[in-house]
Image (tube, rainbow, N blue to C red; front, side):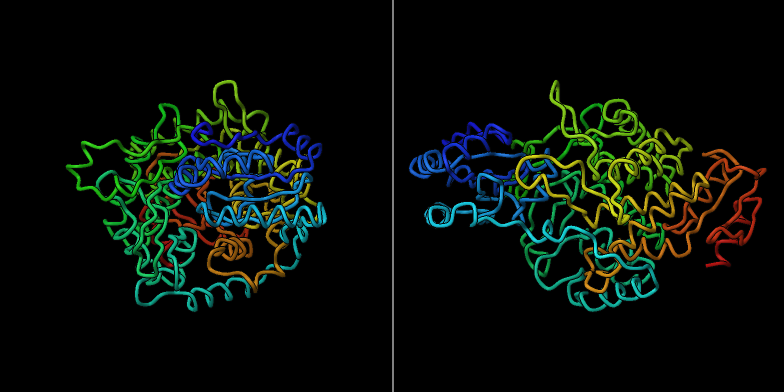
Length: 538
């Protein structure tokens, strides 16, 4: 976003802003924004550009603006539940209070209350969010009850009338769909159908973010690369399990959007902004209008998700477009953002983002293990995994979200459940691809670190239960031929989505074998024989 668009004199996040707050005894006003958020632009226009409000902020606070996409660690510690996030901090970076979008009247009121609280209590008025106070994972074990509980949650939260999970806003929840595809398929397919009907832009392509209403009305129209990539994968899985060509078409159409509108020439851009006026125009009217702006920043984590999704689709369809763009993005990310296994969040000219963030390490590793399975090209998968294990692993087995910093709440460790599970899931893939069981052991410890919280998890983290189930009895199809052969392509199409396909496996000669928990359960010497083997075992 253009910080010059308001009358507030924004500072960058850094030592200077915190030093000024300390020296002047003023609280900080942290504005967390994104380039794609219509609400961020609306608050700039309505609130921060109002002269009296801007003067009040400039005189009484140290205003700091942070791009939430470029600074994931700040985002995760200060996000108030959406963007913009409006957060008032003590000079030590503790939270006084916060909100999301504020109109001028509400903003004036909160400014006065913050000043009163700060003048009365000072630094003692600040607090540390619970996620950081109780950061250490709860520990536990992995057992069958984790998966059983999540199936119960699916049944309890499912909306029988409109599809999807929940009784208020409707989010796509692609990982939950994937979990349900093999455990509650009708729920999964009805949800995919609802997403197709209500969130897919059938003219420009791509999926909108979510719906404000239970019946999938009130569409929020930003388009984010990570969410579109996750839905490509979910629809590809839906096609794999049902054979429904509509699911294949939705995935293919979204890939076209990603590889045209969101393609920078080297890799995938970050997002496209939302504009209700544009997206509700008739197609002929859209031709004459300016499309919402695109943030062309190439983020490592978003590209990891897109590479994985496109190669997953290609595994089921042999789609050349998906394969070609996935490989181009993978090669760019590896060349520009990976160094000795450490992943940099983004580079923009001479500007480099933070390095060694768990979200980047996990998603890039996932892209590389998928590339290994589908294309037989491992790249620096081991290096990325080993760097992550060496630098971000806690003694509990869980993983830090990244290196800790010195400013504000960045000095507090955070152990994100969702990203830890993403990494663990991928480390299990790596264990099966390499035959190195210590990756499985590390994955097991990472998931077990949250085991005692599993009975409180909802459908939003169904991926946790899916990974826990995989770890109990991991499956692989090992193929004794190179990637791209008929036998390998058959394995990709036939494998359950939790089963790893290992191309060019050692000790095999033009045959394939199926393993469950390390034990060989059958062999096949042709695609037909492999289909018979997998079908019989299923």
